[in-house]
Image (cartoon, rainbow, N blue to C red; front, side, top):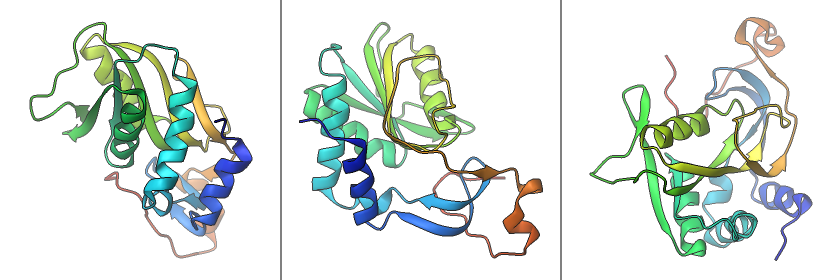
Length: 193
């Protein structure tokens, strides 16, 4: 079943995932809008539906492994892999990079799909691409639930986004919300220095 962009947007809005305020994003940039994926990821039926659209888009690509970064990407990797009938792997933070931990392996030339939740700069997906390259895996493509960059991030591979939006974000030195002394919230799970 095809899931439209309008239906994806409705899933996020109905879940209360779109928040307004002054946010420090995991990329370090600031925004007045934040898409909190965990408001959606708390509902298994919604996750299953979103992941079915990712699985549908890659159903004919002979995917062997679905790889996702911590934390939200792990849930998506598991469910997309389950729907495709393949293995899921998890890219966990180890120092300043992503790694396969607990002895998990990704063999050379394994047809790999990388999935993640919300993409702004593409950093987490790029870290997964770098991890796949270290293991000499064959990356078939990447998929995210929401691309906040408006489609401007180019990762050099096939990219699928269930919803592409253009959310304005600012370098902290140019943030009008900072200049107006609006209180800032740092949601997300990536540690910033």
